[in-house]
Length: 453
Image (cartoon, helix red, strand yellow):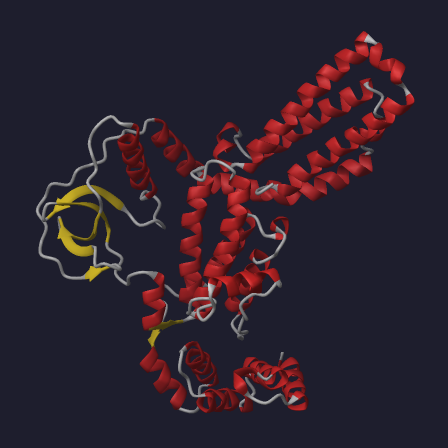
């Protein structure tokens, strides 16, 4: 189960016990199956199993939480279903499916974490869920048509320069050219209008870029979005070196946008499978943001597939930042081969929320270092963190001078930077960056890194 898996696992455990007990009874006591009271009890347990299935679905999808006032009501519903389950198991003489007092205490300890998480999220998202689901229910196919005149373009973006910046009612907007939208009642036209209307509703989330509507620019149909000042993520991190506070804020905002979509059940079919795939992709996006480069940039698609089949992943450069260490834990879990071992949306969101409150909110205006500023800072000779960051930055470039990289990394290591010691040791131990393997030196540096903590 994607969300609240411990609650669902507790219910599945009980159903599994019943399945084993039934097989045993079929072998040992077949005459009971011809009894009317026995038959009635089986009909009843089928209804109870349906209730378990419906409840598991409700607690898995946050869009169904509106029927529960708070987490205590969820616990009461769980207890009610379990009580009814055990009652009918008694009627069927399935005593092994009836838990002892100690077993029930252990079961509650197992699900308590889920209940606490449900309570937090119910308080936080109840308003958004009510608004969004009500809005979708009354969805109109009429997307707003923006008729006002625009001021001249300032910037063009996109592969074919199809995104133009203009000023609309004093607001910077992005006008993206699209095929003409036919205003008729065909299924295709209505589908397009519905998708556009959903875009408009998604823009209500502060973490999703605002969609204003449709319009025409120079006789071409365009969709109007809020203008992204810094462009896409890739163009942003290619121009600037981002500090960890800012990286955390970006991560927090991106995930909250995804969570808003998931929370309101926009993913529709096969949601449990799809969300696991999305979480794996989010882990890759998080790696990209942490390292400020595209993953597997020098590998072909077939090489990437073979790399994954061999359980390979991108190398994670370690740093002394606590934010980076915590984000790395999320990345590693999101990259698990077994989807069931990947974190749930709730786990990731709770972790990012805690990190954001503890680190990012103390810095309302995170520092953004241009690459030139970083170069100057590292060249200063006294800032070990900057020297190491600059070494990593050079590695990310296609054509870099290995001697320069090792020089900056060595300076930081000589100054006692544990991360530099570890990464430099890794270079010599495994012959990275084209260097000749020197295991003794590599092991010595890694041991020093461990001593430094």
